[in-house]
Image 1 (tube, rainbow over the protein chains, first blue to last red):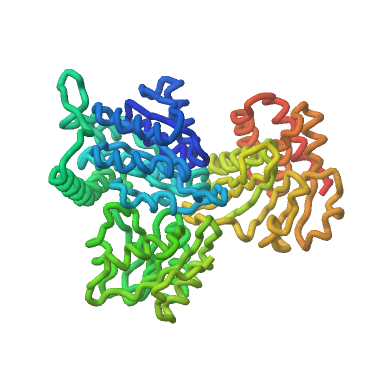
Image 2: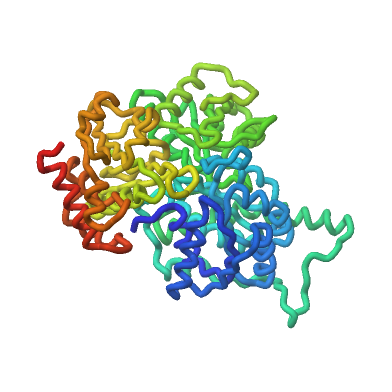
Length: 378
Length: 180
C-alpha cells in the first residue's frame, strides 16, 4: 500500500502491540501518533494512549510503564527530544526497553522544520540504541526489529528517520501480516517488574561501587545489542525477505573510494554510485544503519584495504564537525591499511544534496588529501 | 522517470492534489514517491509537494531539480526559486484567469493556464482548487488514466464528492478543449 514514513512507522507499532503509548505532539512527528490514535479508535489496537503535558512527562510515563512490565512506544522530534534529554538517561539507567521514533528536524534557534540529524545524534551518549532509516519501508521494519533487540538486552531504542524526505514521503510499502509480526516479536515478559504484589522497586540511592557496577552492566547490555541487532535482522529477513544489516555495503567490490553516510542520503548516494560506476569510477557506498552501538568491527572489516572514504554528514557539532565523521575516524584508529578519511558537512540544515553533488564530492575526495577539520559542502 | 512539483498555499489542497495523482499512478502499477515540505503548516503559507513516478523503485531522497511539470496554485508563488531548474521542456500549469501569454516573461517554458478559481466556485468548492488542477494536469500530461483518477478522487474527497469530480472533468476539458 501507499504510506508515508510516519504512517509506515505507525503500522510497525500496531504490529508490535504496545500496551502504553504516552504522547506529546510535535512537527514533523505528529502523524505517527495521529495514526496510532486512529488505529485505537477503529478498535485495531488495544492500547492506553496517555496525553501528557510535555515530552519530559511523556518520557517519564514511558519509563514507569515500561518498568511495570508492558511494551511501550512513543515518538518525538527535535525540541521534543531536547526536552526529554534528562529522561533519556533515566530510561537507559532503568534498563527500560522503550522504543521511540524520532523524526530528525533542525533544533532551534533559529526555528525550522528541516531534515538534520543533529537532534538524535546529540543523544548518542544517553545509552539508547540508535537506528537510522533510509525509507518508509525500513522505518516500519526497524520498529519491529528495535522492539526485539531492546527487550532482549533491556535497553531503550530509537528508530530515526528524517523530516519530509522520509517522514512525509508517500511510497509503496509492504505491511507484514499480523502472524509474521507475532511470530517475530513474542509478548514482553521482563525478568523484573514494578508490581506491589512482588514488592520490587527501582531508583533507590546507591553508593559509588553500586553505581560503577551498574554502568558496567549498562555497557555490557549495549555491547550485546550489536549481536542482538544482527540476529533480529537475519530473522526478519527470513520471515519477510527484507534485511538491512547493521551496515550495508553497496557496490563496494574493488572500490577505491567509499561514500559513507546514514539515513535517507544513502538512497541518493546509491544513484551517485551507479552514475560513477557507469563512468568507470570505482566507487561504492557504506551505509551505517546502527549507530549505537557503533558497529566498529563491521566497519573496520568493510574499510580495510580501501584507499579512501568520504563521509557525508547531514548534522553538525560545532567544535568537532560531523558526528559520523568523528565516529568513523575513532573506529578506524590503528587499523593497518585503513583508508584516508574525508569528512563533508553536506545537507546540514536540510539543504538539498543531489546525486550530482555527491558524485562531485566523491571525485574531489579521490583526487585530494583529507582535512582534519570539518569541510562545508552545502 | 516523471518528476513534478506542485506549489500552493496551505488550505488550497496542493498536498492532496499530489496524493491523488500519486495514488492514481500507483494503481497503474508505477512506483511513486510523493512528499511535501512546508514552512509553518498554517493556512496561507507556501506548501511545496514533490512527486516522482517511475517503473522501478525510487531511491532519490532530494529535491526535484529538473521538473517535467510545475503546477502552481497561486501566481503570486511564481518566484525564481520555484522556476529554478525548469527548462524549455518543462510544462508550467498556472491557476489563473489570464491567458498563457500573460506569463511569457517568466521564461521559455511550455505555459498553460486554467481558471481553477472560477471552476471551483461554480462547483461550490470555494477556494479548494486542487481537483480542477488535477484535471488540467491529466489533460496536459495525458496520464494518469481518467477512470482511475475519478475513482481516486471519489475515495479521497472528504466532502462534495460529485462536485469534485465535476470540477476535475471541467479542469480536464478546459485544457484539452483548445484553451491552452
